[in-house]
Length: 435
Ligand code: GDP
Figure (spheres, protein in one colour):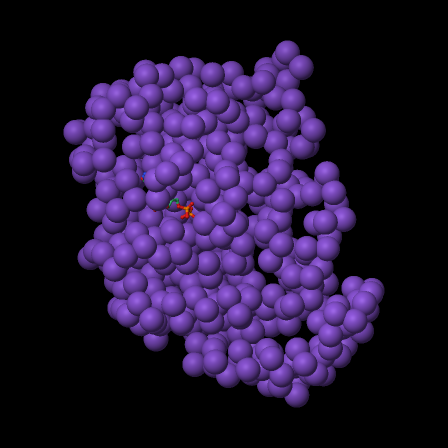
C-alpha cells in the first residue's frame, strides 16, 4: 500500500489538511495534484497553525519531497508569499518542487474571473474570484502559460503577445489595458520565475523514481469530489477534477499505480458558495455545526466566507465513493457532534414524492430533493481525548459504523480535534516500514 490518494469526498473543507499532515510523516513524497489557491488547508502541528493554499502538506517534514503537480494552477504571487511565510516561521522549503507543466494564473485571469462573476448577477457560481476557472479554461483552450515558461522572459513575452491578442475583448478602459500589456506582464512574471527557479523542474523523474523504489507516496487533493467538473453539481463546481481520476492525471501517476483511495468526509456536511445542498440546515442545529468562535469554525480558510452547513448525506457520499474508488475513509470533526442528543443522517432521497436511488445531478432536480433521514442517538460526551476506537462512546462507534455501511467503505481514521495527535487510527495507511 505505498501510493495513497487522499481526496475530499464532499464539497471541500473536509479537514484534509489534518489527515494529510498526519499521513505525510510516513510518506517520502507528497504530490498536490489539482486546484489552485482557491482551496485552503489548515494544518495544526507542533510548529503552530498554518494555512496552506498551494504548497503540499508534507512541507513540515524535512525528509519528505513535496511536488506541486502538473494538474495544479499556480498564482506565483500567492505562492511566493506562502513560501516567504513558511520560511519566516522556520519551515524549510528546500524539498519543494514545482512541475514545469503546471499552469500559471495570470493577472488577466483574475480580471476575467471577477468580471464574469459580477456579470452573472443572481446566477453567480460563487467563485473565489482568484482567476482559477479562467486559468483552467486557457489550459484547455491551449492558450495557457505554464510554469516552465516563466524561466525565459523573451519566450514568455512572445507567447503573451499571441495569447493576449485573443483577449483584447477584456480591455475596455485604460486600467484594464495596462493589465493586458505583454511586455509589463512578461517582466513581472519572469521575475517570479527567477524567484521560483530552484523549485521548478520536470517532476516526471522524481515521481517515477519514487514509484520504482516503492516509496510511500501521498497524493493530496484540493476541494471535494462533489465539485468535480464532470460529476459535480454543474455549473456550481470547480474547473478541475478533484477526485481520483484527477489525482492520476494531475500527478503523472498511472491510475493502476494507486493502491488505496482514502476519502475524507466530515462527520456532517458543509458547502461554500452557491449550488444545491439537500441536507442544509439553519437555526440551532446550524449554530452547533458552525462552531463560530472556535478556531475550527465553518468559515472559509481562503475566502473568510461563512459556510453553509447540514447533516451527513450518505446518498451523495456513496456517489463519491463509487465514482472515485474510495475503499477507505477518514471521518473528521466527529467532536463537533459531541453535544447533540440526536444526529440525523440522510439515507435516501425522494424527488416529487418518489424514491431516488442516486443523486440527480441536474442542479434544478437536486435542489428539489427531499432528504430521508435516519435519526441516530448522540453520545453527549467529549471525544476529544480519545485515541482508540474501543474507547469511543458506543453511540459514536455506531455512527461511524453506520456511515461505513451506508457508503460502502472501511473507516481508517477518525479525527476528534484539530491537533496533530487528535486522531484515532483504525487501519494502518502508509505503514512506517514501507519504502
Ligand atoms: P481542508 O481544506 O479540507 O483541510 O479543511 P479546512 O481547512 O476547512 O480545515 C478544517 C478546520 O477544522 C481547520 O481549522 C482544522 O484545524 C480543523 N479540524 C480538522 N480536523 C478537525 C477535527 O477533527 N475536529 C475539529 N474540531 N477541528 C478539526
